[in-house]
Image (cartoon, rainbow, N blue to C red; front, side, top):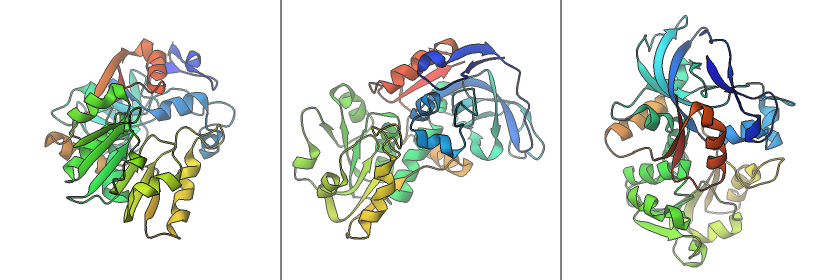
Length: 323
């Protein structure tokens, strides 16, 4: 089969289209004929090996432990391993795995769910990581409730575009912060208010929010907390924009410590992958509350260009590789 493979860490030019052996599903795994694969920030991090902190988490110190790139997947079950009970041949599924930039991939049964019936494979492929992260940020970390005022920083990006929709589904009054080129997208996602950060600074506007969901920023906690109500909650989703060592994750790791000395709550979120949240996301999608926003679609051979485009920061929503 054909796949996008890398032997060393580096920029997009280390990604190569090659023929490699077809994978065989192990116990508790399904073999998926990939129809589409989402492109998320994690792809760039695993391609470059930065921040270096992630290499200590089992992804390979000197070279990638998993040479095929891609983690979000949508496709059709072609075979099942021993012990698999939730799927059979021909089922359309979506979820997470290691190596979705390929014609076939094996995924753990507990990280895959039935594909939402009202989505194309391309739309479904961009939802597993970004959509579930948004769900966990809104529902679990932020505990967003009806009528609350919620600020979403990075509202036009991969996670942010889902977060806007999930927060609206939970009954919040949503303000999205984004760049000029993403304002119309964020409005179309249902945001009640949109702030173009190139023109206005939400931190100086005097508005206070019950929950701030920061998906893409590098503002200090001292500034973000000024926009929170006295009992408000700040959720920092992942980490971007930092140095090569920690990559911005120090904000997420340090946030809970600040909460010890404040009535406000500060939380760092690292999402967890599981099929139950995929199913919860599917309910929102099939109800019409969430629609995965796809900016551009690339062919498998164009995956390096897709990763570059995603990392430039101009993507409105998500990028997908169609196979």
